[in-house]
Picture (cartoon, rainbow, N blue to C red):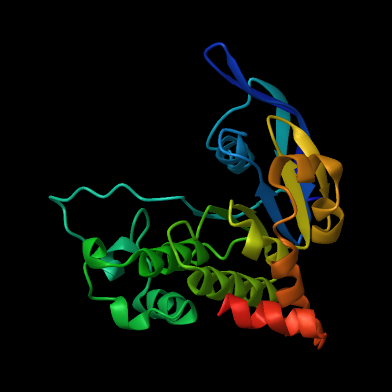
Length: 247
């Protein structure tokens, strides 16, 4: 059985139909990325799949006992209520010191436990949010544009961490992203959304789909070449050139 299955999803805000006719499933262990232009309904779809937002029509079915770790696009913090990273991990449920330290260490920010959230950089904050999402031992890790505002190297490092976590804990990963040059190489399956699913499949299939090209052009080839270089050891000159340019 799929971890998550959605059938015929539609969502309206006022008179505007944001999504319609969306059918998809998420299987254990796969990394699925939702891409699309601004206003295409990506975050709305993710929130419906998480159960945070109810569809106007259609149904979302979760596997029995499904645990979801959710990393939001950004977190609104009350400036008058300073909170340390360690205290933040106790919201909404208190966790043991050992579990908190293990989660922070796994995402590379163990040294930040006593730091105030308001003093963190964007990249540090995203890793803290990821650590909190891992505390539930998720079956599905959901991330809404998790690397927004990071530079290209920061994006690549974060997505590499996501791949490592998927391999370690066997969770599925479902994320929304607009960073096409990086995210295409970090996904098993890509769903191109623009109010409905325009196309889906492996990164290669989607990159060559006419619907995708109409929306985004052909600007992701460099990331795919870089991905092949790092993961499949393809050593041709064009690949090496892309690798040099990306650093």
